[in-house]
Length: 346
Image 1 (cartoon, rainbow, N blue to C red):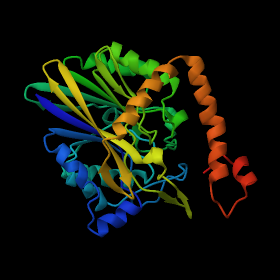
Image 2: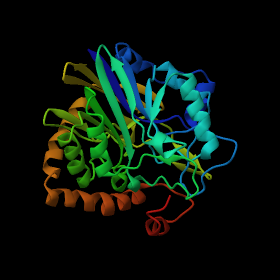
Image 3: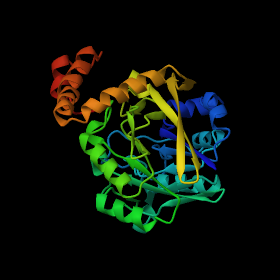
Image 4: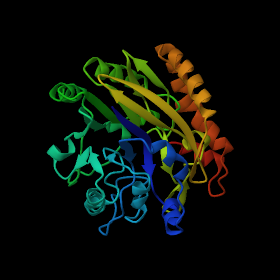
């Protein structure tokens, strides 16, 4: 038997750097729930700062310090996915510094590398005779913004290649797919319609579990043919982004809710346990009542699988919600009209 736990986007940026310097441990509430996990897997969204500058094609950019990355050791992180849209924010120097830290800390990684073949290489884990193959992909619509001469490579999502990989590693007991996807619905409470079809296709071709990231929100999950699909686990931890004199808030209610997913594997089956939590002023706290909210979200998600109903949600999310946000927003530097005219910009 093996127990593997999963968390969402890890952004140890900005205010988390200050917390680490003050010797504050924001993740202690979750440590007891991880004590019996054989492996903890998370999506490392934030790369260490380097000495060579930043990727000016990416907006906004985030970074952390090597010291702050030690928070990963506090929670016994065992594996991180790196196929994210912020992997090149601090250029090759920041990326290599991060890899060196992960290697020294015995934290497995996948999804990105300094050569295409290393970026596409899976990660493997074996426990009590059970073998696990982890595959990590990034969808182009998440906007990684790598320049043409980038020396860092990402394992880009190509459905045909995904199916080939699942077949190639079919000898493993379990194949787990880690997806950085849904760029058109970043911030959405529900996934893009196309994600549903792709996820089910991957299950049809051998995937045993799908864990999604990137939306920064806790999205629904579903059970399909006995296998689970988590479209997005939301933010495990993310500070407001301080960029070019502005602050990109990550503190809305939807961005502070997340969940820890514990999966117990035995033989050729597995069971799951979901522990919801929230980020309150950077400190994580368990919120069991949030599980009811997630169940209600799952119920509504069944309706959204009918495309006409999903189209109504798309119009709301793309047209009306951004307008409403700007109406409620307090911004002394720009008028309401200016903000509405530039609604797609940072």
